[in-house]
Picture 1 (cartoon, chains in turn purple, green):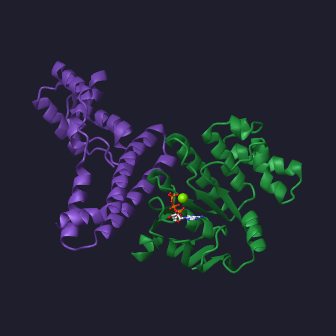
Picture 2 (cartoon, chains in turn yellow, purple):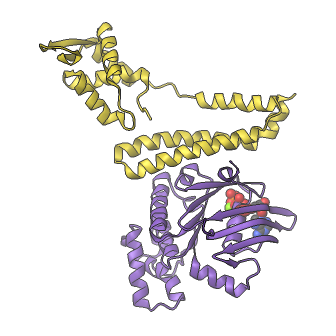
Picture 3 (tube, rainbow over the protein chains, first blue to last red):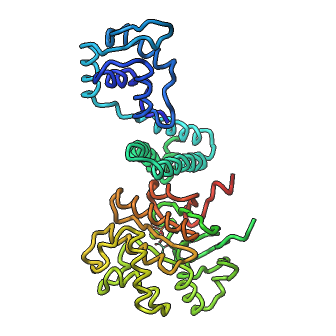
Length: 180
Length: 226
Ligand SMILES: Nc1ncnc2c1ncn2[C@@H]1O[C@H](COP(=O)(O)OP(=O)(O)OP(=O)(O)O)[C@@H](O)[C@H]1O
Ligand SMILES: [Mg+2]
């Protein structure tokens, strides 16, 4: 599971650079240590992100050591970069009603086409629970950071499941409305 | 495949006009934790009570370790409940006049274990459930989470083959609920006990190995159906 969304990896790098300038490999190491967990960030993505930040003027190359390869450069955060991190941290995240709407669409389509909507919801429930079991197991074996990350995912999945239960309970009502 | 520890098939049960179970089925192997899920009134508790020999189904078969619970005499069923089953409910299961240690020791005392030995074993279970500090207190003097861990210790002290838990975390906040679930499932795994866990909370069900869903008295087991 990747806990830092692709769109916020830039700000995360900036945050890691705020304490001190770092080389690419050092940023990757720090990133993996705190946020990588099951999925470390790829080197390709590290350098792609850094060059994007560079173009945006959010970081600058502070020093270049002699030799070959991308790891010669040490990156430092700029004033604009610091402002960017501060703004990102201060801005609330858009709550994600995404999954529900896909599932809602599937349920309505199943009803419209005379398929088993209850079946679809049951299968989804089983899938959610399977993932929740994995996370619970990981939580049991993990340190506090791992536990908190897993809990976040678990609470979200639980919310989905509650929606699944509620929809299952109101399926007849919904079917009547949809077919009208 | 070896015979399952507990098997129920074709269970029907009505209460007056209310049909609580319709062709319900469940099987559980040694050391397995099975969650029973479903909306309120779907028949979860009735299923658990049938499996545990508390309620007799009108029809159906329940076999525990080769013995048929449905046709068994009441006296044998009581003995089986006492010797082979452990119970954890939402609340109200501890004897208020006894200390927590005495509560945990009670099932052993009923099985004629001498007081000293019973209380020593009870003390070990309190330690295992991380509640040694409440040993000398009465249930009315401990928190909900502590009380529930004492109840789990009491359910486990006789080393039951099956633990029946009906909403064991229903009265607890998330942190305490998870702690109870972690300790309950760990202890069950270590002793090889099977657990039938009724819950409507997904995060609690996530401590199970698999789930059975009850809807309008019918069981659905997707993993078997698949
Ligand atoms: N002793 C009883 N007498 C009469 N009706 C009963 C009895 N026990 C259960 N019922 C009925 O049987 C049905 C199933 O009840 P059950 O307690 O098994 O549901 P449940 O799934 O455990 O619900 P909940 O999640 O609310 O605890 C309900 O309609 C209930 O009213
Ligand atoms: Mg119930």
